[in-house]
Length: 181
Image 1 (cartoon, rainbow, N blue to C red):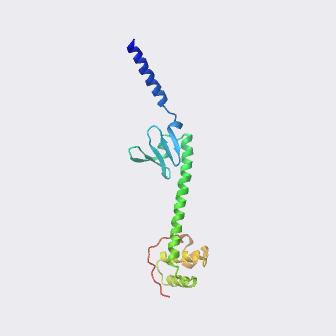
Image 2 (cartoon, rainbow, N blue to C red):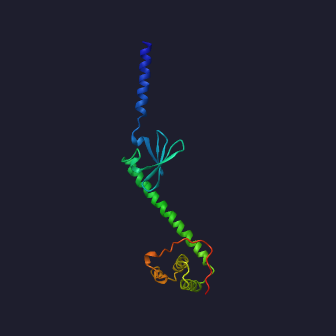
Image 3 (cartoon, rainbow, N blue to C red):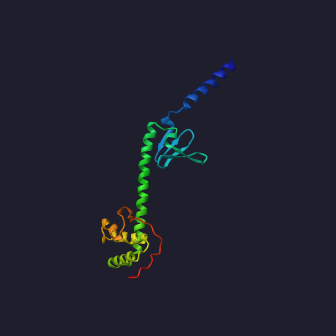
């Protein structure tokens, strides 16, 4: 009788543990800010690239999965999470691009700070006449556009290039070559 009681108690405990441990998908995968956490394993799912989820396992290893390979794919959580992550990813990407453009503009402003508007225009004209590196010419043109001396749509004409080739957000290395006027 003692063995039967012990068996029933053990079976009851095992059954209770098995039933309580089986979490639903909504309970197992919890949306926390910019990640989804697997409450059972502790794994964390992040979106750091378009259509790719990075899984950070509790042992510190990481792996990359396509969105449709995640265990929560096609659930309401997945759809909400993916939309949120994609929006954050695009926002982060846009912010980084804006910051980089602003850094480029600031570097360009400091390169040409010593020149008046007229001096900079003359430097550009001389550089263009001398066929100076096109990157340098575009850099000067970008500063002329930023200062309001040249309109965006005039830049291609002054550079004598196809408008599709104009890139006023270029990055150049210092120092700026001296152009004789």
